[in-house]
Structures are given as structure tokens and as C-alpha cells.
Length: 164
Image (cartoon, rainbow, N blue to C red; front, top):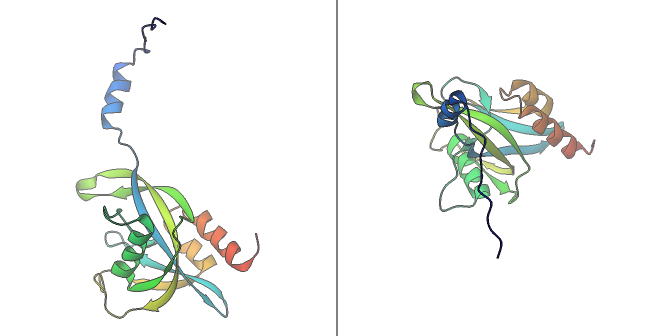
């Protein structure tokens, strides 16, 4: 029978302890990279955030009773009136920050799911709350506010045109 050695953890400074109280683990969000193929190449749907009007992908918090890819398709419908074929596996992920009420900002990890658009509806839950617009991939890369999303959109453009 082995005798367990006592564990002596390094003693953190008072500052490390204080910082640890305010650090929060990354939260998960899901996003829909909605696209369509045109004669001029692939286009990506972007919409504006409700708060600051930044160009973003439809995204939201995971739904408890749905798989993440299903939640991505729900977000695409609710925020942009999009229906489509959603890939069940994430295409990519990126780190972001979500601004909440009263200036609270939390770190998030965003799973990005591809949604090949089959239908654009005229009526949807958040109609009139956001601008919704199609962009060629290069323009979408320039428009999005999230720096970590830019290389994902660039890679998507290369994947769609076979230039990888």
C-alpha cells in the first residue's frame, strides 16, 4: 500500500487570489455562417448587432434541448429570416467577448456552423431590429467587427472557390 504524499500547492499572492475571483470561464455561443452561391461567387449574410450596429453573424446562446447546429439554424431564422441546410459539425470556432447590460463583458467561445441558405423569409421574430445584408466574401471579411472571425471567413471563401 502506497502512502500518499501531502500536496503543497504554491502559495498565490493576494493579487492572484483577487484576480481569480473575477475571472470567469469562457461561455459558449453558436453562430450561423449563412451563405449562398451566385454566378459571381459565394456570398455571406451578415447582420448588425442590436446594440452597437456592428456587422456580425447570427449567433446566440445554446438552447438546452437542442444540438448546437440546430441552435445555429434557429438563430439564423430569428435574427435574419433564413432557412437552410445546416452542417451538423462546426466549421470553425473563435474567441470573442459578449457585452451584457451595465457594461459587463464576458469571454465567449463561438462555434460556427455553415448554413447553405434555401429560403429567405419576409417575416421573422427580429425583423426591423437589425440590418441584414449579403456580401461577397472579401467584403464580408472587411465588414465584420470580430478580428478572430476574419480568417474564418477568408478560409471559407477559399474553401468555396477551391483555392486552398
